Image 1: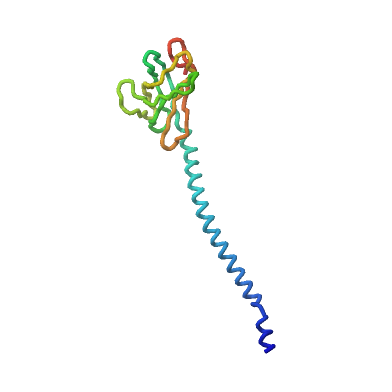
Image 2: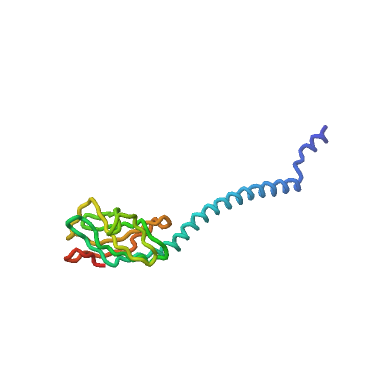
Amino acid sequence: MPKLFSRMKKGISPLIAAVLLIAFTMTIAAILATWAQTFGEEQLGEAGEEGRMAIDCPRIRLNIERASYNDDDGKIDNVILWNRAPEELSDIRFVVYDDDGPVIFDDVYYRDNDDEVFIDSGSFARLEAETEDSIDEESIERLEVHVQPQQCPDVQPIDRCIGVDNEGNFLC
């Protein structure tokens, strides 16, 4: 019996231990590689979208050629915008900053009709805008044009005018 007991005291062979250790390490490596690939693809997808925006968004170019503020009816009128971007622009709004902060003019329309505003590439548009808020013409600091296209939600403002002259015309 003593011989039998001494055989049972032996451990596994070093070769089998090395094989098991390598197999365990390879399994852990495969799990980590799969996770890293999935994580990397997700991050690359988000970064790719942000990179596309960074390339496309600076191409939005809209210039204010002329604009005036009518204190009697609280409208921005006679706004002439020139779309220098390579594509049509819409979702245009005006923001006037006065002593009390920003006043947003979301209701922007063509001067001649109430159609939805789309300015073709290379085209001019004559626009007007209204707001419910009252603005003191003396306290106006600047007018900004904001465009919020779907692909560039954070690109603003596109152009601005500083102050108003004695006749209510923005200084663009």
